[in-house]
Image (cartoon, rainbow, N blue to C red; front, top):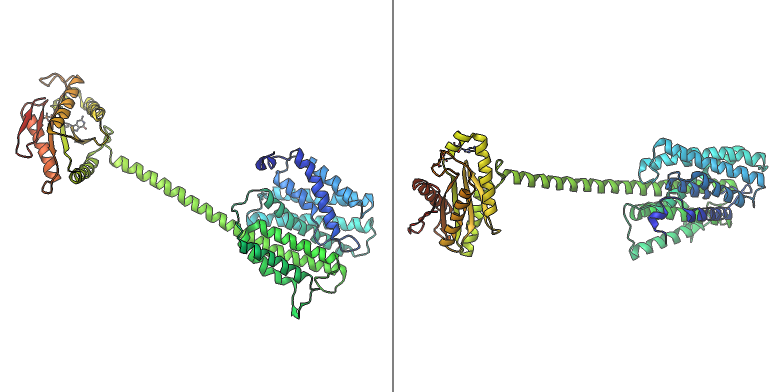
Length: 498
Ligand SMILES: Nc1nc2c(ncn2[C@@H]2O[C@H](COP(=O)(O)OP(=O)(O)OP(=O)(O)O)[C@@H](O)[C@H]2O)c(=O)[nH]1
């Protein structure tokens, strides 16, 4: 099985086999509906087959496709015309299609015909100029070789309109059914019924001899509002199909002598039918394409707004992360620390859990800076931050740079002993880094730590908690540095050297 999207990538062998068959059938169908002695037809469908193929495949294998449809055109024309006339008329058809294709390429129109501007370019290139050229040439052939009795201008006009309408109706129809539509129309049972009723109404109107149904005067113009509603409700695909069916029905009724446009001369009847179908096309297909373009623009706008909102959210997230991060060490900053402490405080209070806060300060850091330089001081702060982060074990634990050479650790601790052990470990870990500090009595870089631990109660405050940890840190400094002091929150002094 050839997949649908693959099938439409390039004209493959299957397509090349089907194209002339389809083209031949379309010529036969069109002749079946021929109404004038010169074989003038209301709508000439076959040219749209090759044009749609050229547009769909963007001109790939154009000579091959042209040869295939030319052969089928000549073959089908051999029945109503002598061979030289059949060949000449097929050449005219080919010229029309390639001239249209050339004009569309030159105008830069998208071959998908899904925007109004592309549809307008297509109408100018095909139904207007391409079909007009064919009409002027075909009328010469019909008069010179076919011995047609109708005037040259009438022949040219009927041919032009027939070809033009064929291109106008069937090219968008064939393209619509061979390419993906922006939006799929889901038909309800009511929609199906409305479509069938409209087709019945159309049949009744077209078979009313351009006159009356049960005393009510009706003309085919009555179908215009119906086609407008179809375009509004069902999109390009179904509208072009509907217009194609109506045009086919019109031609067939004329060919069977039903005279939907009243008792008028044959060539005048063709002209009236063509004008009616032209109006139907402009209203139906034009409206459908306009609506589909507006809907596509709306979708594009919505998707752009979605993209922009996502970008904005991402940059907001980035900004939030930047505003919560310390630029030098890359860990959380004071602002984030304040937020986290407040959150953890509330959580611990709700869950009646113990909360531990450790404030760390690098010892004799001014002297370190003075001795090793500010840059080396920065490196040390980064190294301490790195070590603290590595020491965090549980997911709820949190480390921040509180300011200057001071850091803070928030953690859940089961007991005061645990909190003390954690702080002591950190203290020893920093000393174990063995960062030379010649102006310190220890000879290496050390930190002092003040620890506070509490199960937050109703009368406790986070500010007092912070102050207690700070006071413990101050005590650690006073008592000789490189040590841990535990805050005396419940008036129980605990002291431990690191
Ligand atoms: N290199 C560097 N130094 C900083 C930074 N922030 C603060 N400092 C320095 O840290 C030093 C802190 O000095 P002090 O408050 O006197 O404390 P200390 O020298 O560590 O003495 P103790 O705390 O009593 O052990 C000052 O010299 C500040 O300039 C920083 O981001 N980078």
